Image (cartoon, one colour):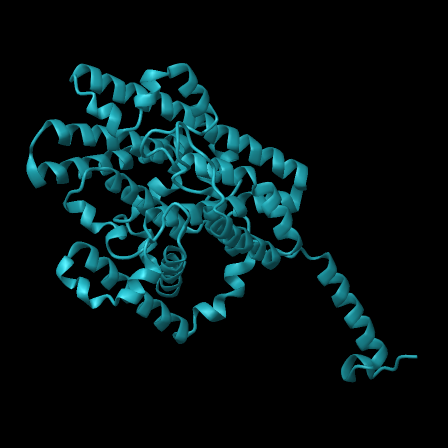
Length: 419
């Protein structure tokens, strides 16, 4: 029998009951954890918008602004940022749906979003082909069709269109959305495994990545070659983003806040900077030992080289450390254009591909030097910002159903959901 002292001192019977209740709670709780509904992580919007701007600039011919992009100062570039945030936001939106509505409903929602992104890709493909063909014909310059990779379309349009619908044929600069479509197709399985064992799921992703390198796994492209971004390798970054969104980042908080982690990241980023410096300043090539060169090169982007992945991790760790989610600068009007573009990334990405070729055409036809290069780059960014503002205004002011859309929570966009 229990005594009156049990609640104070804790008898064996009371302790056993407490342990049993705690065990029941742990058994009922999901393996993954999610932020509170309705939270908006403005840092994600900010860096997704930044990635969109950097991708646009990198797709233009080399100019002064190109030297401000990430790829010139380390191993990774804007693509890593974009795919990581896409995985994070997709898990944030559909992870909650899977916990609340179940696997079937969440899968249906994911497949609906995959279809929307696929339609956007096909629409962009059609407009992009029309843009290139019109310019090449009007200015009697077939080099445009060769540079942008559509020669096969002009030779065999029927076969090429079918291959494009199968995501096997893509003009230049149209590789990111097909990668995202494939990754989203496997999101239901990823989330189902995350709900069971998130750390095991991440481990399986690492294993697939290793097998990709060991056995040279890839998807073939039309008319020859392979995908510019190998889904078997890039899935690691996408799954890692999902893992972070579903509680992994919270569990890593102690490691991320460690001074040792900070200094390891700084040393690695500085070393990567000096390596990339030797690419542009041949006179510095002698500082790289031959042994390290043989081990390091080539730094493969197609298969997401380990050095690229580690470079992104170092950047992300320092960003989380020095840019907290409540940083007042996130409310600054100066950063509003970036955040707006990040909140509407699907539309802005498609617009950026279109603008990049338009800028390429102007720079090829008009010799205006560095000033024209800068003008084209800045004009493209302003147009992207203007479009993002219009979309935001429409969703929040002109669209009568905006209130229903807002209720889905933050950071969706490419994943699907509220703005």
